[in-house]
Image 1 (tube, each protein chain N blue to C red):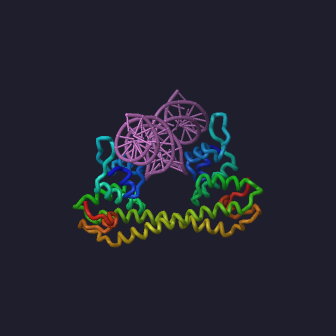
Image 2 (tube, rainbow over the protein chains, first blue to last red; image 1 turned 90 degrees about the horizontal axis):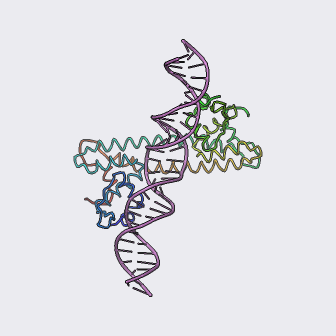
Image 3 (tube, each protein chain N blue to C red; image 1 turned 45 degrees about the vertical axis):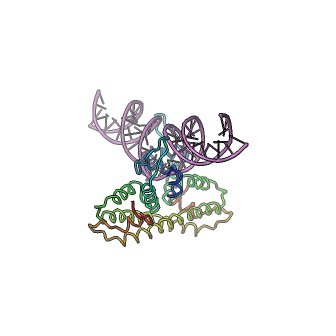
Length: 132
Length: 132
DNA sequence: CTTGACCTTCCAGTCACGGGAAGCCCTATG
DNA sequence: CATAGGGCTTCCCGTGACTGGAAGGTCAAG
């Protein structure tokens, strides 16, 4: 398969697939004309990566996941550990966002949102400092 | 004040403050020796930016917020609108993370996490494709 | 006079791509 | 057989918001 076909089949843009080759995630063969040639196994890997990325794993985490996937002697504990690490990252981000959301929602709630200039959102951002 | 002092006082790294000058968010004066000289008003602005960034506003949103802040004739509706836009962005990100978290937590839950190689996490990422 | 802390500019790297240019390859059609 | 189109190639730049580091000027203390 050419890159266009695997792009279609995997859902990844061709640009992204080339990038993945650049950083050594996949190594397609080359036809005589220089075109990349992908096997079913390559497509399989790309789909794997696409799903892992979709779950928010970083490229380096995907690299590790792929290595574990291809290692028939892996321990599922290693995979689980990586996934739990990522889960913790997600939780941390969610908490950060929730904190932001909380503060911001309060400010938005307090703001009249009319034609007048006084605005609790701006006051909140300016915080304790008085004037300038 | 020198950059070190405003960095300390605003909580922003000196590097970041120089960057903010680069992109035109602040324009400190210069002493004869070339050092940046910050006034109280500059510090005030930096603290404002730091808080807005802390709430997740982008640099460009901060630029707009600053302009509104300094416009005595602004309408609070404009500020509120920007804040609500950002609130919606936060909600979108939270939903994305929640979806990821949900799927990932299911996979993690299903994984024994022992010395054996069979792993639902990897199977889940490999999804419908059979083998290679 | 030297040391060390501070300041300056500039360049490169981060992460994970995306846009676009310049040019080769292949197929179909007139 | 020429050409038009679509697909493929490489290469380089840009994104956001910084961060790290090198090379060098400045200042106050001892």
